Image (cartoon, rainbow, N blue to C red; front, side, top):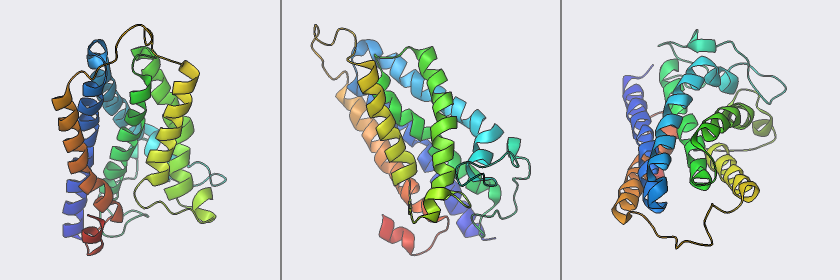
Length: 230
């Protein structure tokens, strides 16, 4: 156990946490005025939902055990057995710190999809979709790429900081949903204008700042590799 690595990973987790509010400002500034509150509240609600789901069963399904290389099990349900001792995925930081860092990824990934759903889906439907999507897409994808015995990792997939698990999964899902749901209501009859450019700049700045923790923290320790990643 290394106290320096532990402190570094806690800072990185905090940086990634700020990326989701940054995303709320970024999307909130890009959408039309009538969709601003819905966009920001969607991101905030996803933060709360993701924390609850990850704590109860998300972490266990993503990193606990192995079923056919696709999904984990419930050995760490409710974070039972996840404490301050070193875990199976990082030997220099507490298991709980690794879990918290990965929770930030589980938080921002579904929030990325909201950009394609604003003005197309009601808030309650979006909330339900995120819960279902996390279980049938994100948790299995995380296990297959990063989990012990994951199918994609076994055939050679390498994802250092979320290129597959975060960006491909959310990007493809957002594209498919946008195609299925179609154009936003009133798209052809109103002029589309960016609501607030300062909000976009603020959000982009928070995302940029948080990315230092997103990439560097994926090494799970503080060594020379982090300087190359920045």
